[in-house]
Each structure stands twice: as C-alpha cells, then as structure tokens.
Length: 227
Length: 386
Image 1 (cartoon, each protein chain N blue to C red):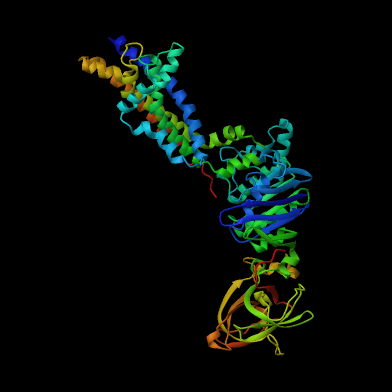
Image 2: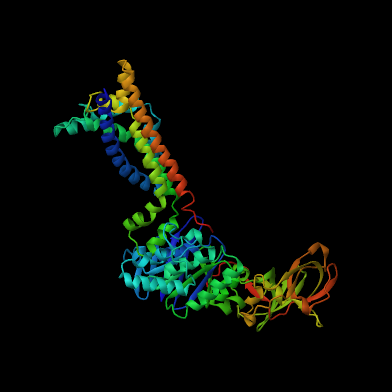
C-alpha cells in the first residue's frame, strides 16, 4: 500500500523539479525583458504571460490539447519526429510549466523593476558588459524576489491538477502525479492512500512556504540603502 | 580634453550643446529640467544623442556622421550619480574594486587601499553601503568611479542629499582631487556657491542650451541674460528701457520705480535708445545713501530677516571674498519697497551686514543707493545664443 502511495510522489518530484528549472529560466528571461520593455504591446504581452494564472485549469488544459494534440500545430510538428506529447510524462512537465510560469514571471519582474537603473548604469560606466551587469548587479539586486518567485512556482507546479489530467492523463507510474492520484484514490474509495498523499503534499507545500517566509525575513531591508 | 557637441530631442525641449573641458572642472548650472543630467548621460554613453560628436583626448566616443557610438563600458568615463547608485549587495572594498576586476589581484588590492585612504574611508572596507552615512556613501561612489582611472569624471549633483558640513568637506576634497587627478571633470549642480567654488569655468544651461560658458568670474560679474543673472545670484531684476547711452554710461528708465537708474555697461553690450533691457543688482551691493542724488531710491523697510551669514555661504560668491567665511556674523536681510508711489509698490531685496547699518528699523524710510558699477544690465529678449 505504501508503495502504491509513493509512486505518484516520485512522478511528482521528477515533474516539479524539471518544471521549476524550466520555469526559472523562462520566467527570468521574460521578466527581465518586460521589466525594461516599454513598447506598444507591453500590456498585451503582459496579459498573455499572466493569463494561465487566472484561467480555469480546464481551459488551460483544453488550450494545451489544442496545441499539442495530434492535429495541433506543435503536436503535428513533434509527430514528424516521432514524439507524442499527449498522455506522456513530458506532458506533466509542460502543464506544470505553463501554470507556474505566471507566478515566476510576475514576482521576478517585480524584482527586476525594483532594481535602480542608475545602479546598472554605474556598472556599465565601470566597464561591465550587459551580461556582466545582469549577473553581477541585476540578479544579486533582484535575488530575494527571484528566490520567492522560484519557491512560489515550485509550490504551484506541485499542486497542478486540472491541466495535467487533461494533457497527461492518469497513467500510474508515468503521469500520475500526487494531486491526480489523490483524486482517483478518493473516486475509488481508497481513503487511506489518499490521506497519505494529502499529508505528503501538505508537508512539502508547507515546508516551501515556510522556507519562503524565513528567506523573506532574512533578506528584509538587506537591499535598501539608507540615504 | 573632452569635446562635446551634441543634439538630442527630448520631451519639452531639445538638448543642443557645444563645449569643451580641458584638464579643469567645468560647473554646469541651470534650472532643473534644462538638460544638465542628460548631457552627462550622453557623454557617459548611457543615452545616445541624435547627432553630433563626443571626443575624449582625441578618441571619438560618438560621431553621428560616421555612425559611431562606443558603449559606456569602453568610454573610460567615471560617473558619480546623485543617489550614489552603490551596489548594495557588495562591500565598500568590493564596490571600489568592481571596475578593476580585470587587473591582477595585487594591483586591485593596492588601488583599493589607496582609494580607501584617499577618500577617508579606512576601517569601512568590509561594511555594506547601508551601514554607512550618506557622506561616506558618496565617498565610496567617488572612489569607485576613480578606481579604473577614467579619463573624465562626471559628477551629477553629487552633494544634493548631504547636509552643509559634509557637503563642504566633500567640496574641499574634490578640490584636493585635482592635485593628482589629471582628467576632465564635469560637475552638475544647481547651487551657485558650489558651482563657483569647484569650477574654474561655469556653463549656464537654459532649456537644453548653454546660454553662457565662461570663466567663473565673468559668469558672476557679467551674466548675459536674465536666467544667467538669476543663477549668478543677481536679484532685484527690473524691466526698463534705455533712455540714453554715452560710452559705457547708460541711463535706464524703470517704469515700476518711475525713475531712471544709471548703469555702467561693463559687458560693452551694444545698446540703442528705447531698447528693452533688464537690470538687476545683488542684494549685498545695495547700501544706504550717504549723499548724491543719482540711483537713490527712498524705500520703506518692510521686513528685516536676520540670518547667519555663513549658513549658505552666500557672501562667499562675491569674487573678492572667496573662501572667507565669517562665522557668527549676522546679516540683515531687508525686504524694501519703494515708497515713491504706493500704487507702484516694488519690493527690493537687500542684504547688509548688521555692523554697517546698525539702526535700520522696520517701517522706517531710508534712502537706498544702487551703485551704477554694480548694476547688471542684460538684454530683455531671450534669444541670446552666446
């Protein structure tokens, strides 16, 4: 019984770690770009990036099926090279990335926007390339926001259910993540297994939020300069 | 030598300036939003001008004709920001070393130690900027900008957030800096005392243009237009028109006073009769008449404001008294208005040391004398492109 409850845990851990890593980079690139972008389409792009957060999971799942399905544009492309996304493990990652991306993007963008342009300019006048400015000034300055963003994205990826179920389905040991397993266990009346899994999710989620609170307390005011 | 000739369209006005700095401090003064900071940002390469060129010791940093624009990191120009812009995640030593990380470690250590010493920051090497006072933060910013040995140093209102004692110490240190720093220094300020004290020349900005750029004594003694006059500390600006001209002696009729004033045309402005002009005088040049009838205005003293003379060091700006701060002397700051005609009430501002006019009282009328040699005359029209 324990093994049956733990198999979704491994699937979830794999999915969440890979998804968080992807979201981390995508979110930072998008956030950095939008923080300094002031073109005509700013609100439009911003809305697109945040949209998955406010849409019902079923709508996100539907959209993903449209994209990755047999007749979807990306699905057809991948089909040519013999890859099927729907009902495969990568589908759990894709769903988790799409729903956790807005959180990563929003928090990180807030962090980047807080970075004083003069500080970046100071680095430039001191001979730093754009790449060096980003890694030695912008990132360290925005680091607290980037870390919170990553923790939030991690927690959200772990809790992803709706879109995952629609795109990845429920294949035990392959696409059955913890939230999906809990749902089907309850459906099947396996309350004891559901309970174990619920407790696992609770512990991980609570631990990540506690880490976030601890981290925030530690870096509080660390980046403010008294004038 | 830094040569700048740039144009840039901005919101509200166009920046269009042309000047050069040669191993000296040029103070840039002007009302806020007149393009001073934008000029520095263009020179540093943080903003790209629309056209023109920027050259530093013969190196072309920007040239619109040849489509050349060197990125900021290759310009070798130090920039000190108004808000210091320190790296808050780095210590003092790391901040200073930021621009010289490519040098051998031993050299970095030596130079950081040298700058710490020079900017009076010993013992603070491992502190973070948030643990420093604002004056210390500004010293770190200066040290950081100097570390890569830039060929020019741009200071953007570096002292605006400091209190008077700290400001004066840093001003003194910048003057000391010139002894070993051989580059060109541009110093943006809105404070006349500061600009005069530090600069050997002063450039006066107005709406993105330089209305006057000259040796500081000339800027103070012979401003070319009303803005330059105001920035040079001239007050009591009055509109009038030329009544008669004979050599350098000019008679200007002031409708507001209902009387003419004699002015000595020190700048040798070419004036014609009936030309509209603006004349003004520094408050400290007005004194109480001791005879004679020309340029004497009977005035009722409206209000006497006592102030310590050294608070803003205002007397410091008179060329003959530079760097002589008389501590503890109280001056009398009178708001006077002409009593010649109640309907033409005109307020004159005068500053007088208490010692030389001990018995001025509010409400009484005195004869005030505006010495013709101290009256400053500028053309009323603003189309002066000098």
